[in-house]
Every structure is written in structure tokens, then in C-alpha cells.
Length: 151
Image 1 (cartoon, rainbow, N blue to C red):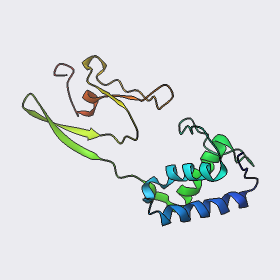
Image 2: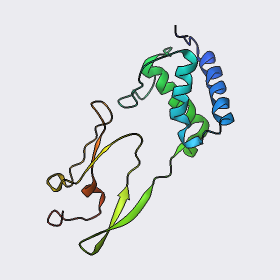
Image 3: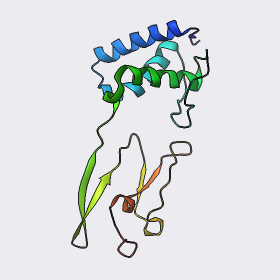
């Protein structure tokens, strides 16, 4: 049976405990938001997946369950760590296509994704995140200024 949080004071106390546990385990600040969700769910005995897309901007007043709990955790960690949560992006690199260099912006990815090279979908970007399966990335869209003819 899962435990329930009833007040803001209980929530803050739980978050302080979770934050201390994350620090004790030397969890990098850049991943503490997502780890905190897992730690809170474990402490409260909550089972099941947590969706991180389509979350409300603010939790409902007095609600400490479901998406509202997730949003509260994310906000608490953001208020605590601010810009230190930002993950340094992988950056950029260069690839050679038919002897010419092209700059490539490397995306940040967590989990699985499908990588394809599809010239027919050049400059078509999708924003599906984890509802029906891993997102698909067209590798050709990562190369800067790649023409349709060359793709």
C-alpha cells in the first residue's frame, strides 16, 4: 500500500530527505530531478511508469499525487539547484559527406531512440516523446546545411 503526502510541509520534509540521499549517493546534480522522482516514488510505495511529457505547468493546489506530485518534485529541484541542473549538451562534431565536411549538432538523448537516414524526410522534425515507443531521429537533419540533393 502506498503512503500519501497530505501537506506542503510533509512534501518539503520528504524532498529534504530525498535530496540528502541523492547527495550521499553522489548522484550528479544534472540528473537529480529524474532520480528524485524515482526516489520519492520508492519511498511512497508508488508503482508504475511516470510520464514526463504533457505535464501541467503548475500542480493543482493541495494535490500530491500523479502528475501533480511529479511537477512538485521537478519544481522543488529546480528551485533548489537552478541552472546547475542544466545538462551540458553533447555538443557538435563533424562528418564528411562525399569529401566535404558538415557540422553536426548532437542531440541529447536519454533511453532508446530510432536513428534513420531518410532523405524524403529532410527538414521534417517530429516531437513524439515516449507515448507509443521510442522517438525517431532522422540523422540527416543533424547535418547543418545539408541540401536535399546531396541527402
